[in-house]
Length: 170
Image (cartoon, rainbow, N blue to C red):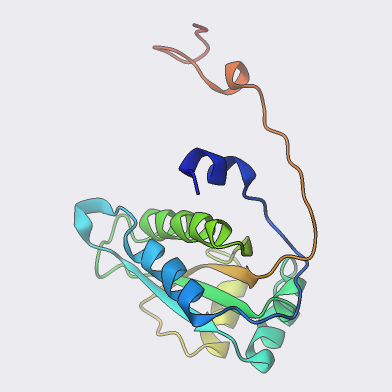
Protein backbone atom coordinates (compact mmCIF):
# COMPACT_ATOMS: atom_id res chain seq x y z
CA UNK A 1 0.00 0.00 0.00
CA UNK A 2 1.26 3.48 -0.83
CA UNK A 3 2.62 5.22 2.30
CA UNK A 4 0.86 8.58 1.79
CA UNK A 5 -2.42 6.80 1.01
CA UNK A 6 -2.03 4.73 4.20
CA UNK A 7 -1.39 7.86 6.28
CA UNK A 8 -4.43 9.62 4.83
CA UNK A 9 -6.81 6.66 5.16
CA UNK A 10 -5.93 5.40 8.64
CA UNK A 11 -8.55 6.20 11.30
CA UNK A 12 -9.04 5.42 14.99
CA UNK A 13 -11.62 2.65 15.15
CA UNK A 14 -13.58 1.82 18.30
CA UNK A 15 -15.78 -1.04 17.08
CA UNK A 16 -14.36 -4.44 16.21
CA UNK A 17 -15.56 -7.72 14.77
CA UNK A 18 -14.75 -10.84 16.74
CA UNK A 19 -12.43 -12.28 14.04
CA UNK A 20 -8.98 -13.05 15.37
CA UNK A 21 -5.84 -11.37 14.09
CA UNK A 22 -3.54 -13.84 12.37
CA UNK A 23 -0.01 -14.22 13.75
CA UNK A 24 1.59 -13.24 10.44
CA UNK A 25 -0.15 -9.83 10.44
CA UNK A 26 0.73 -9.36 14.10
CA UNK A 27 4.39 -10.06 13.33
CA UNK A 28 4.36 -7.49 10.51
CA UNK A 29 2.92 -4.90 12.90
CA UNK A 30 5.41 -5.65 15.69
CA UNK A 31 8.32 -5.57 13.22
CA UNK A 32 7.13 -2.15 12.02
CA UNK A 33 7.33 -0.94 15.62
CA UNK A 34 10.76 -2.46 16.05
CA UNK A 35 12.06 -0.59 12.99
CA UNK A 36 10.92 2.85 14.15
CA UNK A 37 13.56 5.57 14.47
CA UNK A 38 14.89 6.28 17.94
CA UNK A 39 17.37 8.74 19.41
CA UNK A 40 20.88 7.29 19.24
CA UNK A 41 19.24 4.02 18.09
CA UNK A 42 18.57 3.14 21.75
CA UNK A 43 15.15 1.60 20.95
CA UNK A 44 13.74 2.30 24.45
CA UNK A 45 10.50 0.37 23.99
CA UNK A 46 8.86 -2.89 24.91
CA UNK A 47 5.56 -4.21 23.55
CA UNK A 48 3.11 -6.42 25.47
CA UNK A 49 0.69 -8.35 23.25
CA UNK A 50 -2.58 -9.16 25.00
CA UNK A 51 -5.01 -11.62 23.43
CA UNK A 52 -6.47 -13.06 26.62
CA UNK A 53 -10.13 -12.05 26.97
CA UNK A 54 -9.97 -11.64 30.75
CA UNK A 55 -6.91 -9.38 30.56
CA UNK A 56 -8.46 -7.23 27.82
CA UNK A 57 -11.62 -6.97 29.94
CA UNK A 58 -9.61 -5.77 32.96
CA UNK A 59 -7.92 -3.08 30.88
CA UNK A 60 -11.23 -2.04 29.31
CA UNK A 61 -12.81 -1.71 32.75
CA UNK A 62 -10.18 0.73 34.02
CA UNK A 63 -9.56 2.91 30.95
CA UNK A 64 -12.33 5.54 30.63
CA UNK A 65 -11.71 5.94 26.88
CA UNK A 66 -10.86 2.32 26.10
CA UNK A 67 -14.00 0.33 26.85
CA UNK A 68 -13.75 -1.15 23.35
CA UNK A 69 -10.55 -3.02 24.32
CA UNK A 70 -12.85 -5.85 25.39
CA UNK A 71 -14.07 -6.15 21.76
CA UNK A 72 -10.75 -5.89 19.96
CA UNK A 73 -9.10 -9.32 19.72
CA UNK A 74 -5.67 -7.84 20.50
CA UNK A 75 -4.43 -5.03 22.72
CA UNK A 76 -0.85 -3.82 22.50
CA UNK A 77 0.57 -2.08 25.54
CA UNK A 78 3.66 0.00 24.81
CA UNK A 79 6.31 0.65 27.44
CA UNK A 80 9.21 3.09 27.57
CA UNK A 81 12.52 2.23 29.19
CA UNK A 82 14.31 5.20 30.85
CA UNK A 83 17.43 3.05 31.35
CA UNK A 84 17.85 2.70 27.58
CA UNK A 85 17.38 6.43 27.01
CA UNK A 86 16.62 8.76 29.94
CA UNK A 87 15.55 11.64 27.72
CA UNK A 88 13.66 9.99 24.83
CA UNK A 89 12.09 6.93 26.47
CA UNK A 90 8.67 8.60 26.05
CA UNK A 91 8.98 10.12 22.54
CA UNK A 92 10.63 7.16 20.84
CA UNK A 93 7.93 4.60 21.75
CA UNK A 94 5.35 6.95 20.20
CA UNK A 95 7.26 6.70 16.92
CA UNK A 96 7.10 2.92 17.18
CA UNK A 97 3.35 3.16 17.79
CA UNK A 98 2.83 5.33 14.70
CA UNK A 99 4.68 2.74 12.62
CA UNK A 100 2.47 0.00 14.07
CA UNK A 101 -0.75 1.96 13.41
CA UNK A 102 0.23 2.42 9.78
CA UNK A 103 1.38 -1.18 9.39
CA UNK A 104 -1.90 -2.43 10.84
CA UNK A 105 -3.89 -0.30 8.38
CA UNK A 106 -1.79 -1.60 5.50
CA UNK A 107 -2.66 -5.15 6.68
CA UNK A 108 -6.38 -4.32 6.53
CA UNK A 109 -6.64 -4.05 10.32
CA UNK A 110 -8.01 -1.31 12.52
CA UNK A 111 -6.48 0.34 15.59
CA UNK A 112 -7.09 2.98 18.21
CA UNK A 113 -4.39 4.63 20.32
CA UNK A 114 -5.18 5.30 24.01
CA UNK A 115 -2.90 7.30 26.26
CA UNK A 116 -1.84 5.91 29.64
CA UNK A 117 1.37 7.76 30.61
CA UNK A 118 1.23 10.29 33.43
CA UNK A 119 -2.34 9.41 34.40
CA UNK A 120 -3.94 7.50 37.26
CA UNK A 121 -4.06 4.56 34.82
CA UNK A 122 -0.32 3.95 34.74
CA UNK A 123 -0.11 2.22 38.16
CA UNK A 124 -3.25 0.20 37.37
CA UNK A 125 -1.79 -1.06 34.07
CA UNK A 126 1.46 -1.76 35.90
CA UNK A 127 -0.35 -3.90 38.48
CA UNK A 128 -2.56 -5.83 36.03
CA UNK A 129 0.30 -6.62 33.64
CA UNK A 130 3.12 -7.11 36.20
CA UNK A 131 5.13 -4.25 34.67
CA UNK A 132 8.31 -3.39 36.61
CA UNK A 133 8.45 -0.01 38.33
CA UNK A 134 11.43 1.13 36.26
CA UNK A 135 9.44 1.04 33.00
CA UNK A 136 6.88 3.64 31.89
CA UNK A 137 3.49 2.64 30.53
CA UNK A 138 3.16 4.86 27.45
CA UNK A 139 -0.10 3.77 25.83
CA UNK A 140 -2.41 0.98 24.76
CA UNK A 141 -3.53 0.21 21.21
CA UNK A 142 -6.62 -1.81 20.33
CA UNK A 143 -6.13 -3.96 17.23
CA UNK A 144 -8.50 -6.01 15.14
CA UNK A 145 -10.87 -6.10 12.20
CA UNK A 146 -12.84 -2.85 12.27
CA UNK A 147 -16.61 -2.87 12.35
CA UNK A 148 -17.22 0.79 11.51
CA UNK A 149 -16.43 3.32 8.82
CA UNK A 150 -14.94 6.61 9.95
CA UNK A 151 -14.17 9.82 8.18
CA UNK A 152 -12.02 12.62 9.43
CA UNK A 153 -11.15 16.17 8.55
CA UNK A 154 -7.95 18.06 9.08
CA UNK A 155 -7.20 21.74 9.51
CA UNK A 156 -6.06 23.47 6.32
CA UNK A 157 -2.28 23.40 5.94
CA UNK A 158 -2.10 27.20 5.89
CA UNK A 159 -3.64 27.24 9.39
CA UNK A 160 -0.99 24.97 10.92
CA UNK A 161 2.21 25.88 9.08
CA UNK A 162 4.39 28.97 9.45
CA UNK A 163 7.36 29.78 7.24
CA UNK A 164 10.67 30.97 8.68
CA UNK A 165 9.06 32.23 11.92
CA UNK A 166 5.80 31.67 13.78
CA UNK A 167 2.80 33.27 12.12
CA UNK A 168 4.52 34.01 8.80
CA UNK A 169 2.59 32.82 5.77
CA UNK A 170 4.23 31.71 2.58
